Image 1 (tube, rainbow, N blue to C red):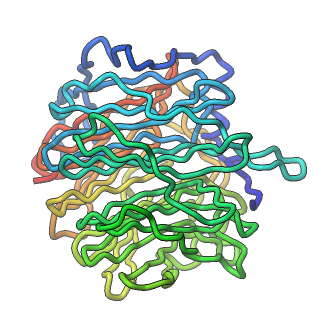
Image 2: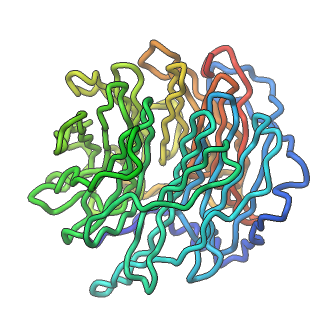
Length: 470
């Protein structure tokens, strides 16, 4: 395992530790409890541009997390929606120093109500071996979802007994998420420890999982594929060994997407002469090795550390879209690039250059109509002045905070439209959002930390003339 400065110079990670010690405590959400005392009606503040200035009623559901989750900066909720508008939501929660669980819920009425969440899995908490003066790094479960018709797919990472390693599992439901079958392992290689995972379903039903693991001595990206007519995954392939075989950025999530022809794309944060920029590799149908990597930008952000903030990719028609964070100009900012699949030559620019402060953890979703949806987090209000990329959110409970933002690219376009802040809340820290869109609407979930504790928050965006799916 490569050592990394896992957020030591990132104020936002230190903030969470301070809050954890300050008594921000909530109770564990149990399956038999109600997620809320009924849906909560709140209001969206006027967003940046292109949206009516009157507040719009916004329906929210909150799913409380534990006091141990307050400390965590890596776990993220995952949303999926099927073609009928049924919604599926999953997240991980740490219930003790030695246990982490996977929770899952669904809505059959487009997000107005949710089933009581179920515990899908109870697993251990894996930590990497300590090196030198640094203790081991705790790895996350990081669930992922995909849905098509009555099929719902849920993946997560699970600690092996006695802290021997990790495994990545896939559980399948064939009854629209009512029940799940026994999970299967998605890899077979010796010494696999899948972390910073991603998951994709192709249009024909093919599946792909990608992850980082250190079986070669450094964190390297691997991927395994299950064809539409198969029941097992093929042996995993090394996506890219890294420069001189030394691996890639060791603690940033991967991202995975299929094109319509079955080509698989895997994105990761590379290390190239000290520059930690995003790269994409691809595996065409019938190939036995990945091509690439293709650099999204060339030697842009030189950084000695790991930001725990990876890329997100999506394929729309003949175009690959990528969003990511880097701090090339000092503050952490989100960028968007796109390239034709035929040439993989990217054009890149800031996603929301008009916003002030810092941004991070962007996520893409391409819906079945060809619309592309993006969510990310960005600061609201004033931030403390710091050198370089050490900016962070204001303290929870103050006038500032961090909020989830949203924008979309309508079918047939290549540039994002107006940006809206989804549900800003002064003094709250919203992070690691997920988005899903269908003909029924656009849905967003995120982590939210405030003075009352931490929760998973879900909402549906109100429809607007621009920025929503058709």
